[in-house]
Image (cartoon, rainbow, N blue to C red):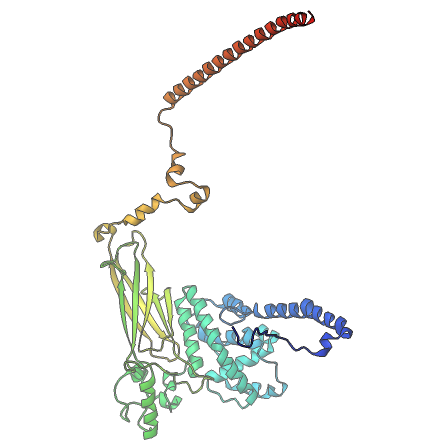
Length: 478
């Protein structure tokens, strides 16, 4: 023990003196119950009312309902034409800020300079003036029209930041409806926001120091080769003859940074050497970024006009040969050198023969870097594939164990099944039961006769005792 003997330790809590005073007890109780019964419930209710407006992806539920009711597959360019209006009418846009009376002149100037490929619904403009303002701001960004108001510039940057989640929902809604053309048009609108490109803008405007006049010097057939070719960048290439050495260095840096990918597609049934009907076919799509070395990862995309750093995503689609139906899709967000997506396709019974599909890999940040490839495979019938259903011994033994319902009732699998089986010998069992009942009746009659004999013997003994009793009394008198 302790050499100083038993030691006690006391712990005390220091409270303000007014809490311990008898004069303030009533006020303290009032404050306590006000916090418990009013303040805390109000805070909890307000927190719930605020957060129930948002979906799991962080968008307003009102925005998702609006997008779901207005997205359709009427036009292959629906996303580029209708995208700015849908983004401007979203709840995130309408709740962004109020109208600024001093900015009417700037908005009027933008309306004169921008080109509206599809006019906004006049009823929406009257109902939501803020949506009209944001719509003009978005068109100015897509057409690279400078905005001279710092307030509108800040609103544009906030809209572009929120557009990442909103355009993702647009693509997902179109993809879940299997509208491949509509989904691609929304991806075009998404990367147009990232690169500040209009509907008719040249993809070469993504390249540094390229203007619309310089882009016209490159033939339209050579645009894709210009963006994805590994050829050296020098003044001999179209459009680069008047570039300075510093400008050529910037263009080379862009070419080295932009993702040049190789796509490999493989179709198989996992664990099998052949594909048969009713199998789940796994289509593995492998993308390899050629501009990266082993161990490197992709950085932010080249997007000087976007409001924040943007990392590229690849959307992989499995479609029919006519590119009309988006059967399956997968989003790749990995930034590694080699990325992979697996699309699983369920084959139906009787669906045999040669199957032909098409795989698309679409970049959401650059225009002109997409990839597509045809995939073909042979589906055999179950007889030709030689598939045999093998049941493991342990799986067979599971039938001997009681189910959960049987264990609750205390029954086993044999007891439960025996109730449904018919009795094989009902007649013999009936005879035996009849004989046993007759034997029981005989035994009971014998028992009754024995009991009656015992009663008669007892009565005779009582009579003899009564006759002997008066004789004994006479002898005693003498």
